[in-house]
Length: 298
Figure 1 (cartoon, one colour):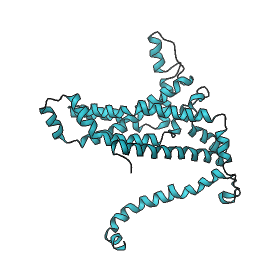
Figure 2 (tube, one colour):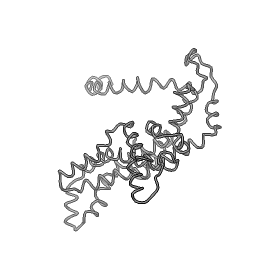
Figure 3 (cartoon, one colour):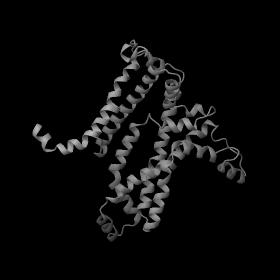
Figure 4 (cartoon, one colour):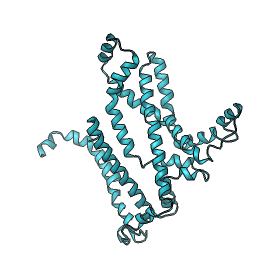
């Protein structure tokens, strides 16, 4: 063992900074999870605070907001997954078929550019475009003979606005991943298919999609593994007092009760519950994908 370490010490030194980073910033802080089972008091510290068992979990499960928080989080994530997951795949397949290289690069830039817009700026743009009185979208609706819609005030509009804006902002990043996978497709497969008389659509179905299927499965596993987690910043920035019935999710609930109200033990318990659900989902989906497609994370 020692001889192997010495023989490949350059590789271990190369990996060492990453390992140290994860140990310090991801594993070491996990000892603080114990406050989920304690009545944490800052004056006593984590070790000195008294144990109270599962009281915080019972409080959350019995809360009148429990069902609404779970349903809002699941609905928003499922909608985002169902509507948003295929979009980068479709865009990548379309861009891959473009023959004009300049137009292809231009299209990639246009699709990818919104990814670099910060969440705060993106939320500001959404409010500006969807304003009931001055927003461009409502002005178009009025010109077409309709009535202005209070997009940010009506609970029913929160989920479509969030999902569609998320697609606009992040679809380009996923497209780049799939384009990289498509770049690895053997050109001889397409040449043989053309000789056999296959058109572009048939080549996409029988060559391109099977080639990127492992990438699709891996990204799907990761997406479902985060089903109970959602970008808290954007939800919070788009949240108003009028749309809270559909916009209040577990992440915003933890922020309001933990950071703003100082209920650290209670919100740690809520966050731990959320993480356990995600971990169980990841294990189940990974095992199912392994059996069905022979592709998995491990």
